[in-house]
Image (spheres, rainbow, N blue to C red):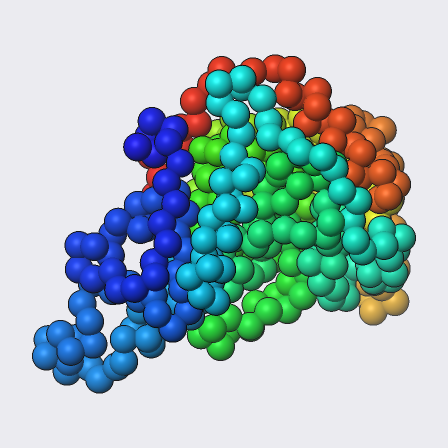
Length: 378
């Protein structure tokens, strides 16, 4: 049914065992009720008999396990009523396929004061802040339905409304987060689990005909042997694949950092957003000025030493500052806008209006393409 464009939503309120465990996961979105819902291929008694592992059903396949560790389910509900209310909220935002238009209701201003945005963003771009606080000041009534909230937490994926329009938000979380496995993950960095979550969410928005809004403050994908061995390249490729093949309108807001491959994954200019705008706090580059200066300094030093020139500490510092100064001038959002890498540099308080105008314009152009991811590495 999913391949026919029919939305499927599963609520796990009891046990889903063996073959039945696959059914909710084959739906577009899956909810699980805390303490009563469970999903596993084999229950605790069979696990004990088969491999000798002693474990209870809740730890094996309960709501916390599948929402925060495995990422199998998308929402954790407090009880059955909460699960049904969540389903209603999801259905409420599905687009009208008969008219080829996007879903819109009467707009509600954010509850939270938008002027607070200027106090939320830190003075230093290396400092942490909570992207949830930015989202609350952009969406209607400051309300949104977060998708896979406990999984892949360096990216926030959520359904919301902006000026009445249903939207799917993909945003970089700039706080350091701790996974259920105890791993600390840097804010603004895309890890395998967050890339995996974003891929599925983008596919869901295409299935439901919901425009996508990307809120960028990204330094790139996680690097190092642990990430490479864990398959960050293939997981990142899946996310980039989903973004590039997305057929619903995409809108990109560059809030802070927009570096390297992170820019691509978060729908940079090359991936055809209908509008891409930057806040004055934005910075667009292959990498940060500090990191770039260190790399370029090593190249410069090697070149000078090859010619027999001796590099003193004072000379090294002078070179570093010279390179960094030149690089910093080129990462400005105004430098990017002047070269049409972005459409405009906007006042953060005008963000809702820009997105709304963009969706309204896109609403006049019916979607005539089919969302197709092709072959994905797994």
